[in-house]
Image (cartoon, rainbow, N blue to C red; front, side, top):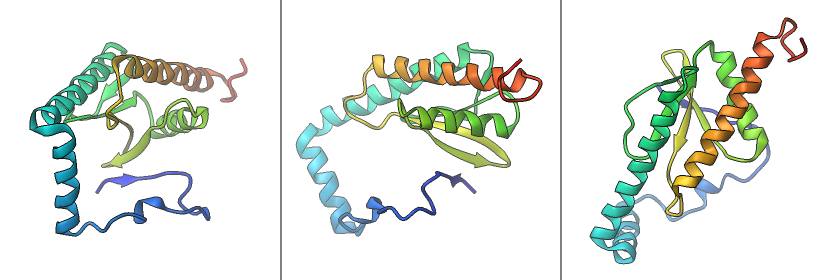
Length: 157
């Protein structure tokens, strides 16, 4: 079972994902029709290939850093990864990344392993955006590892 968690679950904020056209067959086909009319088949194929290429770029960056593991094969625009170490480190990493408000990542947990999900899902995403996101992940990982290495766990040595 895959669990997607976020801090806003129990807060009194609107859940906009339920404020849309229903997911019935007619409306799903209408959405697809609009996408095909907007991009065309070749344009849609090019967008999907671009997203896959950007995800593969992020995967290469993750694999080049020995502090991280890639959790699964990169499929379409989704890269799943984690810091080597326990779940609490990865939970802190996710919280720090999202609290920075520079980028947003959603976590998940499968078979007791907590990991982060990097998704390429905007048509305007470029290579510079992927590099920026990786820089943020690395900076936050440095902070998490520094606080973990400190004797009292709060970063003070």
